[in-house]
Amino acid sequence: MSSLPYIKTVTTIVFVIFFSLKSIAQEGTVSIEQDEKIERLLKERKRLLINGELKTHYTIQVISGSLTTARETLKKCKSKFSDFKSDVIYETPNYKVQVGEFRNKLDADRALVAISEEYGGAFVIKPKNSKR
Image (cartoon, rainbow, N blue to C red; front, side, top):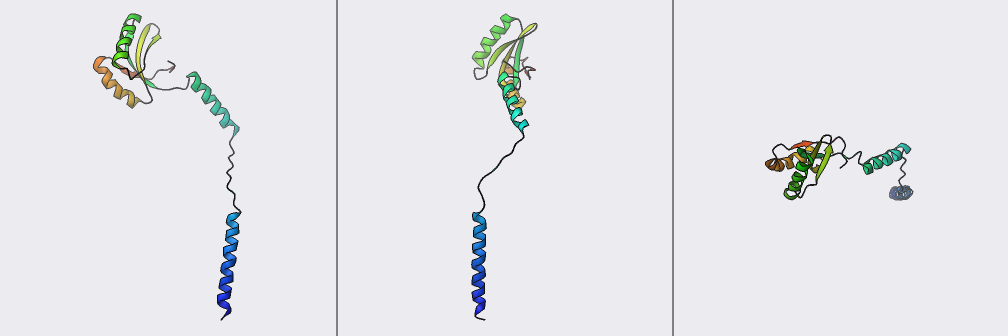
């Protein structure tokens, strides 16, 4: 009976040594393998973003009319809605005043509430060609 505590002690020591060696042998490096297509897609996306071809946003169109009317409206919009970017866009045959660049329709609709108090005919659009 005297050898039983000795066997338990030796067994415990062997397990402790074995498991501590196993945990020391693990490496802390991570290897990431990615398909070469991913790199090409990222470069293409970057090119499209730089050229403005991939940029999507919503804007509020205030008026559509002659150049004189558009310029006058643009001045008013820049003074009244200075926190939004305002531009005159030419699409044959009209000049259009557009206010703001919003990432989603909800933000554009919120701004439309304030803008429509001054310009009742204003509405939210998503430009086909988002270059401004």
